[in-house]
Image (cartoon, rainbow, N blue to C red; front, side, top):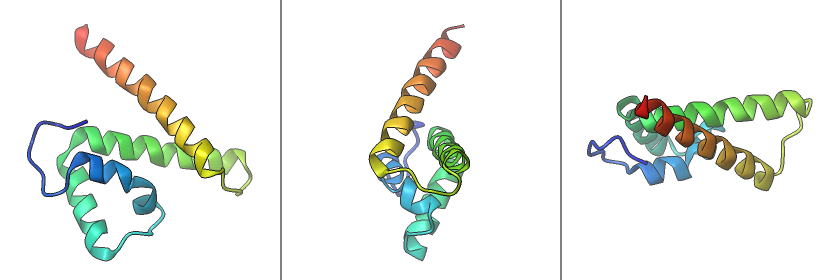
Length: 93
């Protein structure tokens, strides 16, 4: 995924670190690089927002318990798939 613009941090690096970023588990330097990237890259911003929403929904549904990483990744993968399909269909209209 990419918006087509060059970035100092690649989209794949940002998406790999999104969980740690949202959980405040990145270094201050990495946090700044990721924040800068998502401020410039709409597709990555969208993915971060999706991941953030998934975390909120899981937390709400689990009463504060955290879902296993495998479950979170499956849910996020499915949402990305649906999101990509929606984006492709929306652009064709």
